[in-house]
Length: 518
Image 1 (tube, rainbow, N blue to C red):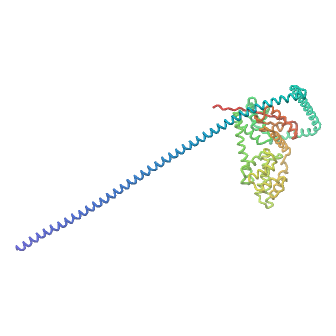
Image 2: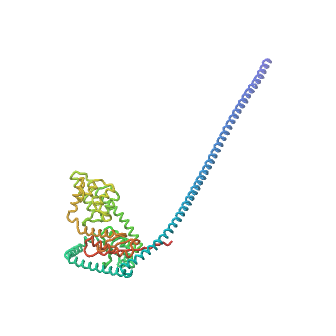
């Protein structure tokens, strides 16, 4: 029993010792694991710290590089600004140097010019003295040869001029009497013709007269203005004749040029509506109305081309087409005639199986020269051909314009069609009135004659051709020359034109002084 107890006790002791050993081994293992884990944590912490340190170093380095780059850029910009400033200063210095050189050169040139002027003045004085001596010597020789003193020669010359003037006046009176006797029958026919034309009031009013209604009779006085300043400015700016008579609340505008007349009518209506009527305002309104008329001409030309079906016309040709709306040929509106020609030519071309578009284009432009024949020298055919060439029209159109009156041989079928259509349009009943064409041509020739003289700025034929007003350049024509100019123009009109009655020639020389208060 003791043995069993002892054995059990030993077993218990051995178990306890074994358990203790096992716990110790386990504890040591746990301690070793903890140490390893701690070492691992420390190692990881070191690595992480090293990474953070490296990242911080990289970030610091990036910031340093960025700061360095910004610093370099600022430095570069400042250097560039300094360089630009230096360049500008250098350029300014060069400019100043050049200006100094120019000023010095001008000063030298001025000194040289002054020297030359002094020398020239000396020479002129010497020449004047020599000329005076020569004139005095020649006068003495002439007096010795003629046996007359200078005063006596002057009186002789004056008497001779007076005699010549008397002879000229007597010859003129005699010529008028002879012409009156010889042309009595012709004058009678002209008087009858004039009476018939005056009876044809509708036609005459339509082509040469416009009537502007007034709100009251007081407006007539405002239009005339103090001492006639307003109406003179209106007539000068527009080139038409404003007739203010006993017709109640109306002003009549008379001019052979419909564009001028329409411009004057629109300008006067604007002035009446506005109420401000004085020379400055009149000039402003007339200029503005002229610009509006330019736009109106363009619209008329575009509408005509659109109606006929023609495209791609040059803008200047469109404007010239618009001007044809205000031109007449033997009483026939030229734009309507041209459009009618285009329609007729189109029909003829279609019947002959010829392309209609080119034929219509040639017909529409065949009289384009009539838009400028009163502004430039030459026939409307010649001017039309030049305009067509200038603005890029085809050879077919150019040949049709040149050949539509038979002056040039037609080269294309379209040219022949335009000739035929022109005859059809002109020959239809009521299409034309020859007296109107002759009347307009006479007025145009009247203005051309006056414009041919030196110093003439503008010419306006008014009062149905019974009066022509000539505006001259005041710095080229003095008062005495103005009187002589009116006489010369009258003589040239007598020699080149045929007209009933007489034509009054008025030469106007106006001087304007302008200053601005600042």
